[in-house]
Figure 1 (tube, rainbow, N blue to C red):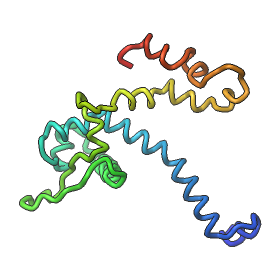
Figure 2: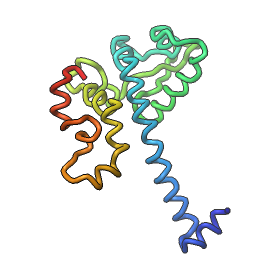
Figure 3: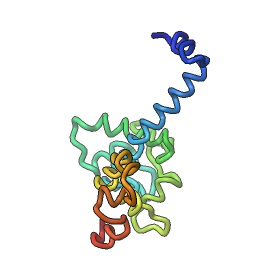
Length: 169
């Protein structure tokens, strides 16, 4: 069905439907962004770049991470995606003909450097915990169950009680 027909069935203009689709797709893809942030935290990529003390080329990063050869192009795509999203900056290295680009930290990825004053890694780790994420799959149950929070449903207790029982989570 064409956009024009869809728009006429709902009484909305095609441009309004397009904006609505964009909004919906952006929110559905938000989970991908969250998992990419988890990925860079899990691999310690902000720490690697920080400890490198200068922008790092992709081959240097892949070497440090010991990426499987079959995954190199996928890792490169994720790094470019995260640069597009503002987590890394791709900078030019003028004297390097072989590798003229390197990755540098941005203000956002600096928040993911372990041990920094403003480190938000613990928050990232809590938000992406499978048990916490599962709570969001339980919104329907939460809606109909009196006096239950999402963490009561997914963790069996309030979030802060759960985290106190599991230090280092």
